[in-house]
Length: 352
Ligand code: ATP
Ligand code: MG
Image 1 (cartoon, rainbow, N blue to C red):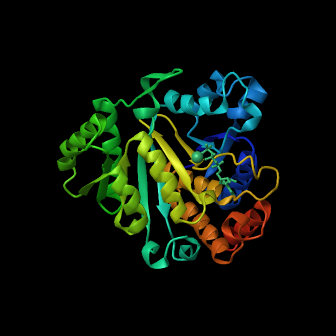
Image 2 (cartoon, rainbow, N blue to C red):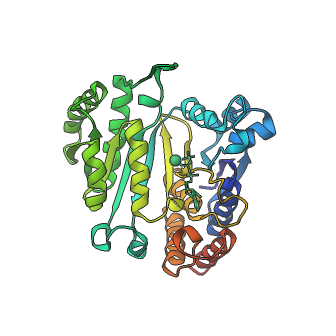
Image 3 (spheres, rainbow, N blue to C red):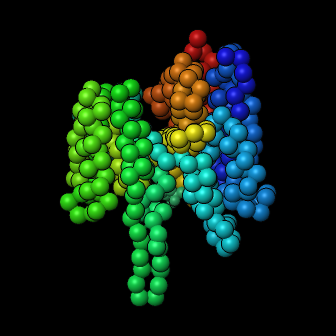
């Protein structure tokens, strides 16, 4: 392939630009001597969108993002825009809707070199490798009515058939490329949307006879993720539960500062971003962990561009810095964002 891939870059706020710079430096180093060619398109978004273009999601950003082959986003938002008429986070919800990014894929994987960094016992976590497939554009976060009144408040948890069917297929197909195991998570002993979710799962499962299926209530699942994280492969869950479970799952690896994610739509480019926020508390100090963004870049190379070998090279560099303790303070090290990035680039350049 000699065509030039267009990557839309939404550089983010607070630590966002710091880790984006790291991710792009690694992307450059890993692809320098390769066939893979790309072009970066810088688009205003989030707080940076408000500052540069007067809105967290300018129409021109939507238009250009749709034309891209992949979208790379770091973290957005923060106290600077607390009083803004439209807050940065609004832009994030809207870009997901505008690009119809209905499935959010969050991996939790521990390589053998990383197990010592987990807060959990090594014996439990060794071999952990699962992905959460979180429904992203419906459920409790989008249902109407939503009302906050003086003496009562309403949220609505809503799903229609096509929304549940498409996320199920996404998860089952992913399982076929992995270890052929799907876990459906819901609260179907109480919630109507969850009964609906589980019924549809049971209708779809027979179409994937090579995939083993089990079912968990979300409360039981919070325990199971901690007590037997190696028991899972692909976890399919509604929006709200997926948000909570994936933060919990991130802790298994030891730091939120290393986990990437991918959001997938029915058409158009995928969007890739670290799972964490813009960390205003550590912004400007040069200590943000760049690994989340570097893993995000690797995920993009592998999933959107099929560049598995380049992605593997990046993952080996990440593994090497973790193994050697060349990491930022959140992972128990004392290196800066820049120093960790340089170490990773060094490993990439000597990995031939
Ligand atoms: P959001 O609402 O956007 O998810 P949040 O309020 O959950 O944001 P984060 O910004 O994710 O918060 O930060 C949570 C904690 O994790 C903070 O203490 C932050 O400093 C830390 N943190 C997040 N990302 C990183 C990173 N890349 N490197 C180091 N620490 C990080
Ligand atoms: Mg959060």
